[in-house]
Amino acid sequence: MEERTRSLSVRQAAFIGVGAMVGAGIFSLLGAAGEVAGAAVWLSFAIAGAIAMLQGYSFAKFGARFPSAAGLLEYVVRGYGDGHVAGILAWLILAANAIVTGMVAVSFGSYASAAVADDSTAWVKIFAVLLVIAMSALNIVGSKAVARAQSIVVVVVLTMLTVFAVSTLKNLDPHLLAFSGYPSIKDIISSVALTFFAFLGFGVVTFTAKDLANPKRQLPRAMFLALGIATVIYIAVALGVFGTLTVEKVIASGGTALAVAAEPTLGRAGYWMMSVTALFSTAGATNAGLYPAAGLSEQMAATGQFPPSLGRRFADRAPAGLLLTALVAIILAAGFDLSSIASLGSAIALLVFTLVTAGHFRVWRETGAKPWILAVAVTTTVVVLVTFVFTTLVDEPATAVALLVILGLSVGLDAVWKRRRDRRQPPAAQLKAS
Image 1 (cartoon, one colour):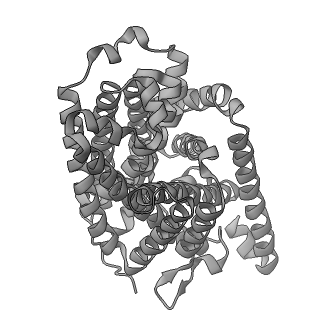
Image 2 (cartoon, rainbow, N blue to C red):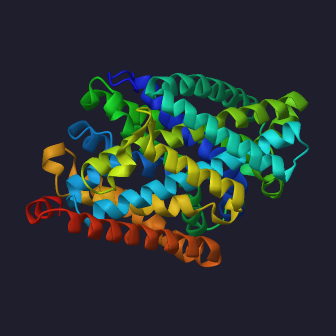
Image 3 (cartoon, helix red, strand yellow):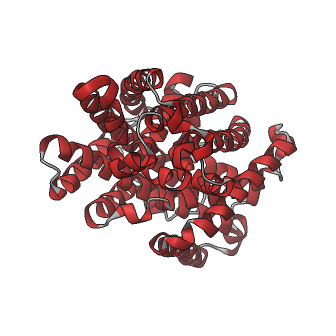
């Protein structure tokens, strides 16, 4: 059995979040964000970080009062009740988590293939699948193993990114970052939906509550530590990249922009250093992305939101929810071009986070949260989501279709399961479950 003792420290819980955030975005987002925000990507990261901090405040207050293995899904239940809203959002988060995990694994495969297999497309898929399998095995071993691996990964990644940031910031060209070359405020705000993708991992911190000795004190600290580290790193890296390369060069470099930007100051060794950093970072993000699946599925199955089969453990060790998430991630990584729906994770996360914090208004007296901060958090997230829909999503039909399909599947799965569940239960149990 996985260890049930509360075994994580604040640093370990924060590093699980940092590992999920840093690997999820910084190595693949700069080119896409640069197409929208130009050299103002650093400002886009700063705004996205501020919005994530506001949401993090809501989640930290929720988690301190209602710590649970279900993480932010527990907050949904507290805000909206244990009914259809909670069920739909649970399926939605599980699906989005599998998509993001698959995307990050493919990013790992791209770097690994470039390093040892001459950019072979087949090897990109093979490396991605092998990574998901390896990280799933690590999660089956237990949360302590996840935390130890994540600590190593985060220390390596942060060290190398710090070296990169310091070297490029010392030699940047101020003219490349001149305000006169920035696009309109509307474009910068629109790009926030993309850069916010790099902060999605902070939601993973909420799932560490079950492994913290004192969630009331430790969870808020872990949340803000993770977000603070990620925000500083993102801003520094964005300034370094766009202060070294032209916007056109960053866009053309795609996922290797950091490695290309490292060459002028660190030489070829800098290019390889950032490539190795990308491997560590994306491996850590895959590890952290799989971490919530077990707790979420088991808690939702225990409350009747998911079928009991998703709450079981095979051989008393392997959580069904984790295996399902890993399987979907493998299928997506091996069989689909995930680059066409790169912004899907942001759209779903913005929607979910908005609903979670909106539900916080119903229990703010219990959590001790300040209503005006919750109002600012909801307002800023809605502004970014609406701007994203009207400026980006309309030009990405694949993302729009995928978003609608996932929403439809979440609603359908919840409705089908609840109908079957209610047919099996006596009237008294149905009343309690609803």
